[in-house]
Image (cartoon, rainbow, N blue to C red; front, side, top):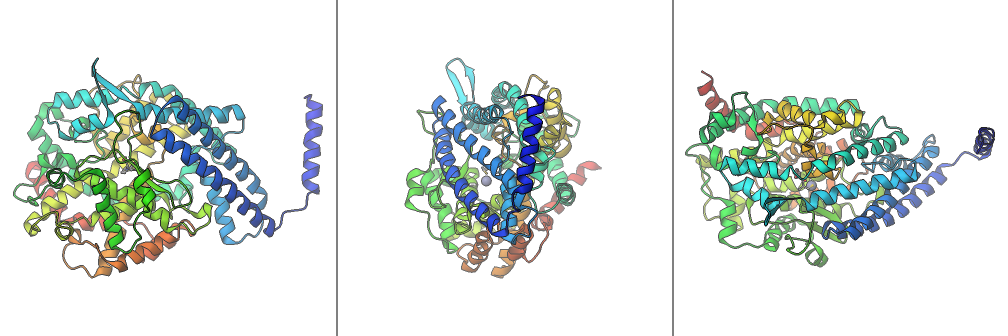
Length: 594
Ligand code: X8Z
Ligand code: ZN
């Protein structure tokens, strides 16, 4: 088209717009209803395609998943564009909220150019598959999958083997680097098309406050939590030096990432035996109990389900048991990273998980079922409001239940014979701190990295360095060997490869302790908070259900208020829970500071 003709076309379009009557509120309402129908249908198709891909990674399912993702993302971008013309109207609150949620719903928005739209969807599906298929071959005939390597990280105490496996898993991600770079470019184009400065700003706009105010909220919460984390870190580091020697740990105040029992050093419960407070053993080891009883994967999931039904929730539908994936198949590649699915209409609920009979996975089962019960609780909401109050709420629900897996509860369900007395408290609290308090800075740093990457503050040539700078700053953790920009360690974490925002898990830690405290207060629990279990408490179930049934229909402070009476996120429920441990840790740390 010549310039002159193009200009004429623009003028004609502007004239047509001027001539078109302004839309009415009724039209806006009809628009959003149509949009919901279209999106719900595309979403279901996308779920079927992605379920097939994640549980059977081959070329063909990759293509089917990419095509379904593409259709969903393109339609969302188109509808978000159309919604603009309704935004100036004086809309009913629910319509306005739906338009807002529509614009915020895709984590990697489609750019305008159809070729780039396809490229973006293809890269995303490819990255997921690379992560899922990732293997490291110890020897030509001995290739390990991620769950194999996680087993070694969990159980081995041989620093050479730990190092080998830690490095081994990270050979999977360097091929992702170039694609990730391009992914960032394309996703940012999409975000800009929707009026956001970059993808990170879009993510931070999901919290019913300005992105800047949200960043400040995170900072405020982290300031509340830092002293607890610092005490736990110092004590753990000291005990690791006792175990592995000063030489292995170093004298820079940091902890090498391969010694903490977890592939990403994100939670540390697997090193409990190395850091247990002397003479304060709770007297039972849940992993050993599950092993001794030969509890299989489905039975572990049944245990989780029974907690929810004890609160008054309906049991999961038969299709949950037929269609979920509970174990790693031997004959095909799958994405083992645990997830919960609402495949169709909040009826076809499933989990996908390569369950192992250990305490860590029992907690993860509760976490995943929390997603499923949440999905069912908001089933009656219109499509765009089917979600949690903010994404931290979704992640917090099952964890709140898992906080109730106390010795008292385990006795009630006859998994232990004897409840430890108060002498076991420090041990119990230490286990929980390694599992949850240790996670806090990791929950923050992943998106601190991505936000800088999306904004361009961190350039591709500094991807790896920036990752480890943040790990040092927030977690006090360092790589066990020198890394370079030939590595791409962020890509060795599922949520980076799969583009799942991560701040939600930090928020979930804060929220779950607030939920738990509120429910325990309601049950009239007396004694230390960490001994409270609301198992069997129908009133607790009702309260949870009230909040969950709201879905995303109201700004999250309303849901938080319904649940806890407070409209603010507050980390003091965590600090209160761990207060006795903190006192003990500080005394221990002080002995060495002298
Ligand atoms: O990804 C998860 C869940 C699925 S939403 C298994 N989590 C984070 C992780 O594994 O990194 C739960 C805790 C943090
Ligand atoms: Zn989750």
